[in-house]
Length: 237
Image (cartoon, rainbow, N blue to C red; front, side, top):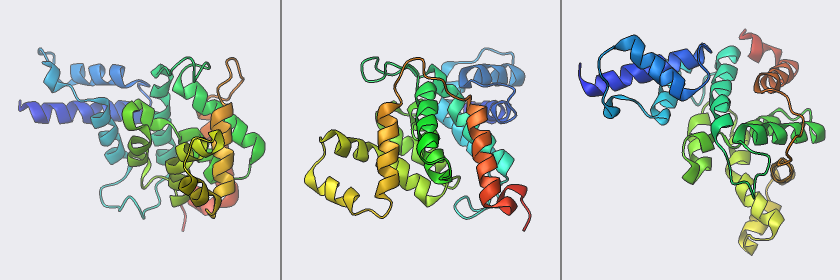
């Protein structure tokens, strides 16, 4: 079999396992998919990267005949996609000095809890709090850009803006940003929500803090979305 085609098939099958929650980790899904497709020896170049699996997952979640940026996804698929992005983060360990709480998933859930305490009604802010670091499971060198690439078309422009600028807002809070950045964020229309996200991000680093599970956090967001727009969740026009 052509090596590139084999790689694509393994990525697609691994994405299917993740989307159906038959596996929760990318490494396990990759190897299970590979063994389901072939029992022959697999050279390293035949195995897809995590990023390729995420791309395959993205294609499976969004129907090919819909424009990602404008189409309303089925709520169940969308939240399963978010869950698939979140679950691998429990194996991404951060610097112990800056993040004594541990892995990225635990940090993200803490930020979500803190945002819930301050703005339990703001669906976009809460979603940004939960998903702001998903890119760390893809490209730790530029996790914001990587995360935005995976979320584009699945979340609102406001969520994208909050995630894109939360690092800059952190630097403003810490006093390490330039004057131009401070002016830009001070004059931003949604600056207050961004400040809340940055503050929760900074405070969400406490070892032992009680948090919800990823599934419980996403269910809270689903319930909130149903309150705000029942038709969007039900899928009816």
